[in-house]
Image (tube, rainbow, N blue to C red; front, side):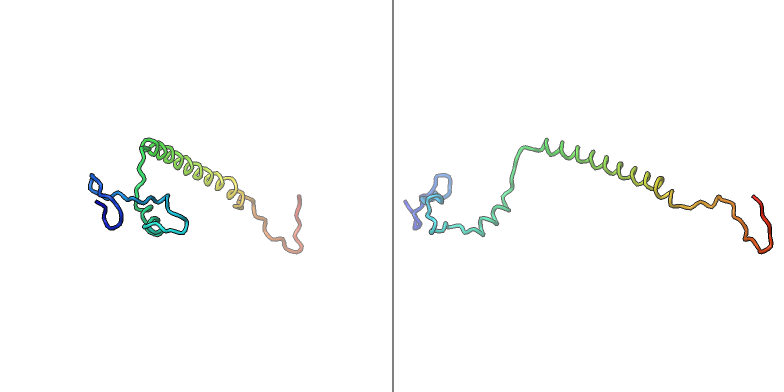
Length: 107
């Protein structure tokens, strides 16, 4: 009951290959080329039961993001208060008027 490729029909509705990929020599090429295998690897969905871990990671990631944004906000405010405040020149000093020749002044 072999077909023209030498494969046997499977009882579950497919064809069982009589050739194995691992049995091929280095010079022989398998019936699936490398480009098709690469494309198939992207189409196959990797499934795992890590939903709980993903949820935990997303929670801790959310907390971390909030913490970092709060920290950056506090650092900006502190920088503005401390360092930029020092750059502002205050005009609280009394202005002295220009002296003219012949005027006297005392200390």
